[in-house]
Length: 248
Image 1: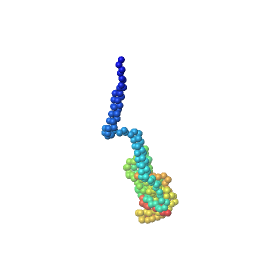
Image 2: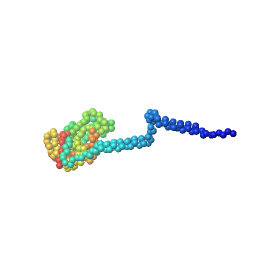
Image 3: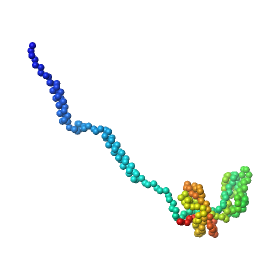
Image 4: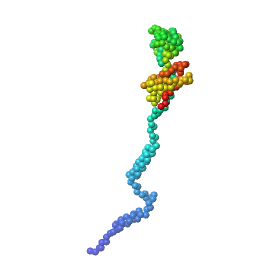
């Protein structure tokens, strides 16, 4: 029996250690660059930075917008003092429009424009399918307009003419808007300037409409009726007048 000496085999252990050591040395020798990328930071940090920047920019824009916003315009204010000037027209205090009720043809006319007529005096006779219709003056006055001729064919509601009482004239204006109407009232003294006569006379407000009228341009105006205190020679219906209130 021979005696053998057992020698520990460290070959495998030494080879593994050498490989690990070699890998470590190789990693230390690699440069950081295109061949080796540094680890990226966590994505939530990047999002947090962007969100903070967006919030800060929004706050800055909101503050700038608040400083640039124009102030609200104040409501129109009408001065308590000062006078008003309005355009007006001389009109008869009493006037009536004559019209037919039924369709027909004008057979006869009994008055001419500008002629005085008595109360219930006939103005025109219109012959229709259901018979003759007689159009008469409602009261004593002047036939200021006549819009038809003998032989004309009329539809229901067609206007024949106008009768007015020229013995009493008044001044009418609709040149009054919602801001001016509050400064006018019944019994108020005004000054009337009649351009055609180059005369100025006193006047007094009789009525101020409570409801506005809608003019052709779509604006709301108020009808004001004024009594002239005196009647200059030559004053006629249809003349233009400038109405002026007294300043305070």
